[in-house]
Image 1 (tube, rainbow, N blue to C red):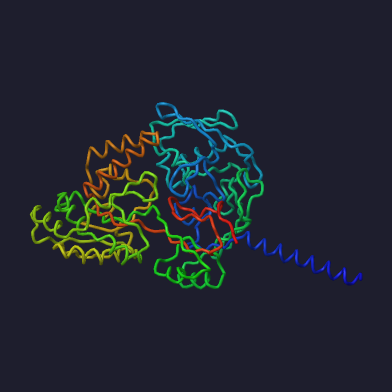
Image 2 (image 1 turned 90 degrees about the horizontal axis):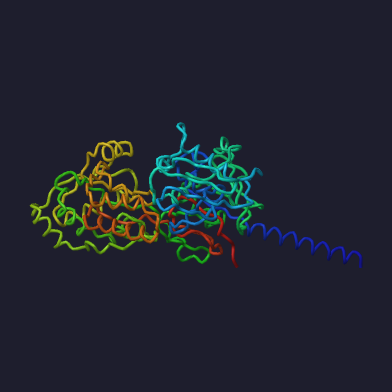
Length: 493
């Protein structure tokens, strides 16, 4: 009897161990990402690969950006804005500690922004925070920002990865041993292979379902496909579009297709004839078949755009119908502009697949209305010199990936060469407006002006194409900002 009871006890114990092991496995996730980050400090490096791993996982800001580009409370639970838009007073969350056990308070906020604005700062977005005139510690849970001018995007900007809060005790070593206040703490970085994070059990906010997350660096598409099929990884935030068919009908996986902040545009030199004539730009707009581009370049996994704005943004309006695909209308506009037989132009293409493939298709589409494009492939250094800096180009194709960057059109010296005082004044008002309803209205007006003036050829928004284990939920479908946010990811039956 004693032997039988002992055997039974062993079986029960073994079952408990196995159940516990399975439970532990089900609370961990292995995520494949394309690039290894050069550092793990998002406040000192511009690489997207840094933010993919640590943003909202290891590090947090006063505000946080949600899946659709909206602003939510972060380490600041609430705030007030003065009537003149120059003073922001933030109330900080209580009971927050950094992963090394040091406490978080207003002094850390002041340290973070003083560090961003320092003369020797390595912050990639330092210019965004230039309007900050002073940061004042009111008390440990209250901090006041004074701005030199109203800045409508301020709450968004302090929620970017570049403005996450760091501590003076650990900031110097964040590049290799990142210490933040987020729901996951850094464990190890095996160079060339992976970064491991574990749930921070004394996290001040809602406890995430995952206990561990491993980011594996797999840049080769074939290797990534094999790793997913073999079950060696549980998902990836962005699979090559041409490979999605492998997973689309496999019940073991789910494919999440969303948008990014990458507006792919036919960049047009508005200062140069014949593109300084709006009729020519309108003709080109009528000649563009966006769906053919999307099908041919991104295998159907992108969303058409009619202006310079991301479709997931709450301020977005659909302007794709402004100049519908109409070859007869395009030819008539060219004739009206004095080009009945069309004209020849150059199209400089940077070394990315979406640009060079789009160039081939656009050349075929434009040929139908008499515009003969010479395709010139250039490397990034030459593109930056010729197109971006010297404005030595007719047309180009590139994705603009910065969030809420419609304001670039207010600068007549920008490489598009678009000079519209009405638009510039509108952007100045938008930048100074903090009321969300007013900002939405102004952003809609700005999008409409760009569409109406056909400043560029607005083609499509680059897609985020995630492939995940079918039993995982809570991954972001859209990518309004760089990062694979872990807090909502969980396993389900």
